[in-house]
Image 1: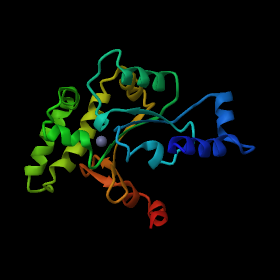
Image 2: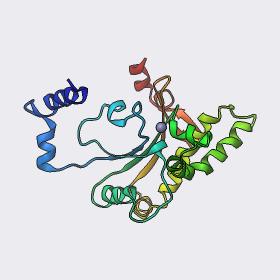
Image 3: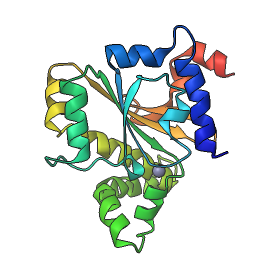
Amino acid sequence: MNPLIEGFLEFREQAYDPQDSIMPDLVKHGQSPNYFIISCIDSRGNPGTIFKPAPGMFFAHKAMGAIVRPYKSGTALAAALQFALNYNKVTEIIVLGHTHCGAVHALIDNIDDEEISSFVEVARAGLEKAKEFANDQTHHDNLHRHAEEQIVLQSVKNLEGYPSVATALSENRVTIKPWIFEMEHGDLLEYDPENQKFMSILSSNNENIKGKVG
Ligand SMILES: [Zn+2]
């Protein structure tokens, strides 16, 4: 059987069949997700997989490299954010980058494909910053890793220029979290402004989670 159909049957069994199943309730009463996740199109870091979400938990937007362009009216992301922040009660926007990101590789390697390069080019400033870090003795010299991090931070900065986000931020209705899914160790990192670096969410500030993960 097509593995997608197989998965859908399993989902249907869990979300529709039990007495207190979640989907009929969400259909009847509507959705009210707390989170809006912007992630890469990568098939390995899909938030729908790695966060094991229940239906109705988050809005999802995807773009190569989780790259957020500077604001322009009428884009898919601008409309989605407006809907999430002005007509729903999203309180947390997460920009979820990941390690081994093909979009970041494409940018670093100057991929010879006009369609792809014209999109990832938007993140050039993040790459330039990453080069400074990689050349600075006080940081590690992994350019790809710095680029993945700096591009997430650049995306967060660009997000702040979206009118719906700017308004929600000024009214303290929303926070923005820069996250990285570190695929090789199965770790989740968040940018810590105090230390000015991405740090593991699992080991730094939650001993309970750490214990659970082992
Ligand atoms: Zn990616």
